[in-house]
Image (tube, rainbow, N blue to C red):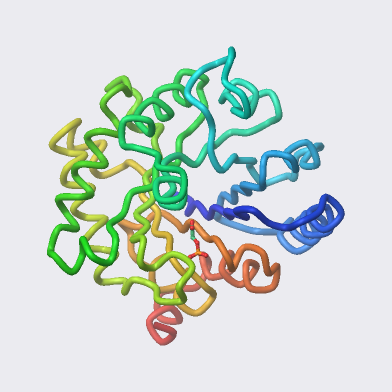
Length: 259
Ligand code: PGA
């Protein structure tokens, strides 16, 4: 299975001119990327700049609303995103949960609407530092998982990409060890198997995200149960991001010496 690397540009860069420059560097540096599916999630306003599509690349959005249209000032629907060429939609990112008060229920609505539009949700889950300290990591993951999927049709489980993003690791330079990330991801696989079926538990894509860089990327990518990465800060530096993409092709013995 091809690894999936998602670039989350968050609220960057600050002008369309800079966004176009960054996009051009992505086009040039990454056109020969092999054995990998790359998804770029820029701010909404830059989505039209991604036409024509970059070969090998998919377009994603960082968020969406959960209704198709209507009196919802400021909101953007999955249908509109699809029309702009998006294939993926990030849902439930911890920054949205924390800063904008998104609840598990709202996230569940978003997952449902994204699937209804035949787009692929990248559903983020993860515990805070305090929840980890209190030994509640698995409980929190299970709650987020159950609430987030409450309204998703059972047969659609294989379309959902999960992203384990421990909140304390995001944007801090303090990444989660491969061992700890693996424990959480294997736990998610267990609850997916239980809630859906064994095949889904094995085959559903689960990414790791949180302070990923070119140094730590090979370690995560070396684990067969980690299907890729959700990259924030490092996706804004093309050289660093290109190295992360390249590490998908590192052979195992190389990988071992690097981690
Ligand atoms: P980071 O962000 O790589 O800057 O930690 C990851 C994310 O928020 O998805």
